[in-house]
Structure formats: C-alpha cells, structure tokens
Length: 551
Picture (cartoon, rainbow, N blue to C red):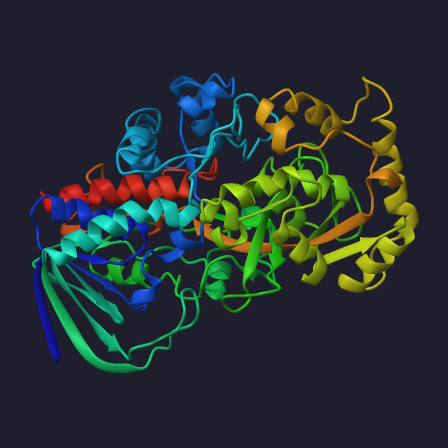
C-alpha cells in the first residue's frame, strides 16, 4: 500500500535531458508536472552532464564561416544512407528522421540560441563514413560543440525547470523508482514504485537501492524519459545482434550504472511496444579511466584520422576502417578477431594535434568557458587531460623505439600476441607512402584531403609524417577497449511522442522521449548514428512529448 500519493497533470519518469525538456514544455503549457528519478538530486541532468556537448546542425552560420557548404538534401542523403532502414517497424523511425532533419536544418539552432546556448566556432567532422557517397557517414563537418559542453546544453532547461519549481508548476521527486505504469481500461493513468533511502552519492556514482516506502502518482499523461541500457552490460549482451559478432566478454562502461533499461519492460507491461532493441551504438576507442567516477568507467577517445589502427594481433585494419570513420563497421570487424581490444599506434605529434576525450570533465576549458585555458591548446604539447591519461592510464604505452613499444604492447595486452617485425612491416609500408605526393595508401590520401578543411588543418589533423620518424616521437600505443554507450531502438512512438501498442494504436496517456524512445519513433537513427545526434534527439523528442503531454 502506497504511503505517498501524488496527483499531477503530467508525470515525467527520468530527470535527464529529455525528461527536463518534456517537463518544462508541459509546464509552459500551464500543466502541473511531477518529475520522478531513482537517483538523488545531485544527478539532475543525467548522462547529458557528462557529454562533450556536440550537436548535429545543418547549414549553420558556424559551418558557413568555416567554408562548409551543407544542405538539407545532403544531410538527408547522409542520414538515410547511414540509417539503412529495412524493417516494417521502421515506419515511424523514418518519419521521425525526416522531422528531425527539418529541425536540425531549421529552428533547432535559433531555439537554443534564444535560450543562451552558444557554439564553439570550429565545426567538427565526426563519423566520416564508410567510403561510399550514398553510404554511412557525414559528407561534411556537422559536429557543433556547445560552449560549456554537456552542462551548457543542460543549463537553460535546468534554469527553466527551477523557475517552474519556484512557481509550483514542477515538483521533483528524487529517489523515487518506478516499478509499474498503472493502467485503467488500456489507458495509462499513473505510476507506482518504491521510495529509496536518501543518498549523498556524488553525480554518476552508485547511490544504493534500499527501499524505505512506496508511492503512487496519478496523472493524465505519463512521459517515459528513463534513458537506455548502456550501464547494464548483461542486457547489452542479451540484445547484442548476431550481425556484430559475439558479445564482448569485457567492456568498459561509458555511462553510469543507473542507465539500466529497466523502464522498457515496465512500459511494455503497460501495453507499449519496444522495437529495434538489437540496434545499438558502442565505441571501439574506449579507455579505462585512470580517475574513475563510476565503476568500470570508460572514456572514449575522439580521434583524428592519423593513428594507425591495429587489431590485437598487430594487423592493420582494412580501409576505410580508420579512426573516426565508421564506428559500427569497425566494431563488426574487430569482433571477428576473437579479441576484445585493439591498438592505435601513433606519435607525440599526432597525440598533440588529434586526440580529444569525450566528456565534460575531460575538457575543462570548454566546460568552464575558460578562454585562457582554451588558448593553451594552441601551445606545444598535448592537452592536460590527454597527458594525464598518457602518464597514468593503464592503456598507454610510450617508448623511444619500436622494439620497446611492442614489448609494452605485449605487457599491457595479452602476452606474445604482437611481433616487432610484423608491426615494423606495417609502419614502414605506410611511411613509404608519405615520401611523395602520390601513393595508394587510402588513409594517407584521406589525411591530405581532409587537411583542406580549415578546421582540420588548424586543430584536428596533424601534418602527414612518418610514424617511425624520431623527430615526431616518442612512439605511443594505446589499447582500445569496447565502450558501451547508446541503444538506438526503444519505445515506438508516433510523431506526437505517443507510445504505440503492438496493434499500432496509441496507448492513451503514455508518451516517451529520449533514448528510451530510440531518440524518437523507436529508433530514428536506424543502424548508425552521425554523432551530435544523441543530445539533439533528446532535445527534439523531449520537446515533442512534453508539448503533446501538456496539450
């Protein structure tokens, strides 16, 4: 029997970015909103707090200033070439993709700009693709970094939510874990669950699950914005698709443990349909965080395109599986090797120019809006967070000679897998292609072409040079682990954010947004993401669901 009963017009499950957007949009419509989250108040904002803050925009002023000519038509070609929709249940994801592209090429930037969001002037070129004009990848740079990173994206919605809370239009109930969506005659009318003991756990850390009571919320509309499954590795392995090979035995966690996917079956029990559960987005460039926040904390390298990528046995990956090009294509290839890790081999010159780390905490200059610290990136040497990983991270090997490097790789990885002659042959063959302006090495050709983009030449792509040239040393090898991140499927929703039953009809009163909804429709990205789309998908689907629930 519930010892706490709350009534509201709209109940939002999840206080992450999508949930915050939905809540403030419903409150703007004059509704009384209650927001539930199993985590404590210090976790307000959820995963978005840890994000680098990249947003996918099309035809922006920032692009034009960098000489990038983009268009909705080109973005649509890239999106649908990447999504590769091929299922009957892709009906709504296709429509969501169209709507999101219109948003990204239309009012998205102005909407955010009006709330004070500002962008770093250099547009990044993420997920450069699989080498096909009509295949996966971004044809042009579209990755717009928010000044302030993830916290900068969250800030206007936290500010709006607190203003509504002060006016008694939004009520936050933290440490409230939803265990059931209540239905009557097929309509969602509320939620029930457990009240958890208060916790002073810091943001991202485990907060405990001791139950101290029960609650019930009665509401005319329920919005599921509870995130995905990336923190639940057992669920990730259960959902792992055969097309990507066998599930990894070991992975690092790119999200905290509370990203557990538990609301998906709860919503299913209330009549909603989950689709595309086998579509997921995990990275192959994960590092074990030397200074972790949560258990098994992984950080992703956002690599420039120059490092030589080797599998665990020291074999070079085939074209076009280069750093920053085709995430899932690379993951599929590496799963076939039988090992859960691979290697970057690079030089000090490359790490200084090309290595960035995902996460707001790994980019204190951008997160803190610190111009003086930002200027330090232009000075010799790698950024301080990179140097800290190089010095303390268990995945890094630094050496003066190739023999020492291979010895370190066999020490950090499995003993005896990598041989110096084999690695030397790979690097010498690649280096020979640097000696003239022609050549046939596809990666070197890409390097030269991409440096024609001002943003790459200034801060992202090192001048092509021989890896074995001691003037660019020392040599560096980085063990790369598989890092869990996003689920691309989820609760199927129509263009109003309403959850759909297996019959295709809406479940009255039940909505979904963010990763729980596959960022819209149950998977608007299809099989592949173009990066900068996760936060943007939370913003767009949260806005849609909040406005619909508030109506």
